[in-house]
Amino acid sequence: VQLQASGGGLVQAGGSLRLSCKASGHTFSSYAMGWFRQAPGKEREIAAAISSGGGSTYYADSVKGRFTISRDNAKNTLYLQMNSLKPEDTAVYYCAARNYWSDYEVRRGAGFGSWGQGTLVTVSS
Image (cartoon, rainbow, N blue to C red):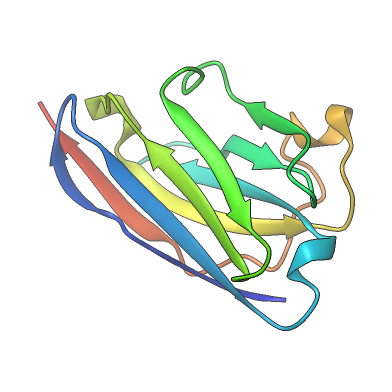
């Protein structure tokens, strides 16, 4: 599956953004999906993930209660609604796919591939 993320931009602290990740191919609905982010000078980390049917989700503690991951399998699209943004949310955000859901591996950001090109989110204070 090929992935393309979009929706990033510059926003003030407290604002909102909605990221989208469009998938090509006919198997999007069979993949668990995740949103990762990489801040300048830091390692890439998983922010949120969702199972293939949407029944299971995972959020990193740093985004829990502020971000919402969702997907529309009919549109081959993954979303990340980001509210109450903070300067520390500034990062390049990537979407990625995983063949199956595993609580243990998803929370560690393991086993994801087919990385999209990333979209930059900048939150000003």
